[in-house]
Length: 364
Image (spheres, rainbow, N blue to C red):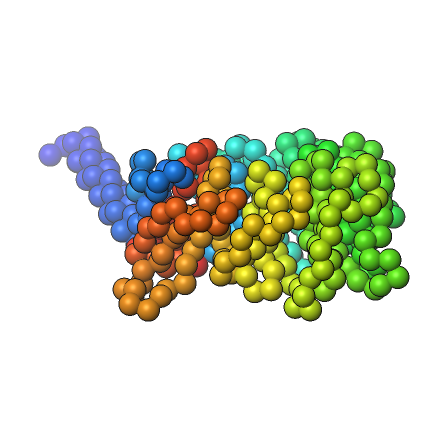
């Protein structure tokens, strides 16, 4: 056999070997990745509209706060973004994320105990648009044009595309709580129950008031729709204020255990909050308590339906997660379904609930 044919045979052998190795590695990778399922359920009756089979990268993923464009999962060192079409991307060196636009995510992590590193990245893909460090930094909120950050120098508004500072207010310090409404940034300041409404374009306070005059306290929860803001003050009052008024539109006293709270969901002027170790729904307009149920910190609201995670009940098969739908305005049970994955995560896509589950319980 001449030398040319020998070289050609050698190249063919090496090519076939490389293809076999690639195919073997790809097959092993897919087999080692947890197989997951993304289902879309009707908010009206819980029926499955359609579903997707997915392969999540290995890891103990924890579901972050539900974003509007898909799921965000974190294992403490990486963030996995998964949109409702099944596209996904893993971001290294990130522990928290905000999905601001369908094609942009804001990722953060703490390279040291007093530094917050923020970066804007593309999705899908991993292109870095910009990155900035903030001393004692914390993200207060973001919209499609601006990012609002608390840091040791006050509060700054950054242009989303470039991170260029639009304004800084150095007087906004000792922030206890925050909420980004359509027209302003609402802040709970200090330990005197002060609430301040900040103009989004200038950073100047539109108005401020004390909710508990002469009584040391602090605001621990804020939520609103741009016309009215609900304020929960630690161990004191639940109240609401119209946009131009310094007098509460309504106010009700809370029990002595009202020192911990969290906003669980807000839609159609109904706020579902953690209060006194329960999930409680309040009407923003009049303060009426609409219903109370067992505490569920991971719930989703689609139109007029709330999807709650139920703790295992007596007689229920081991490893079964019960998901129950309630009417948002009354708490009346509508329908329920069970999942074989106790760690299934829920979200909302248009008029359906999106339910992400893994047979290997990769989501925690």
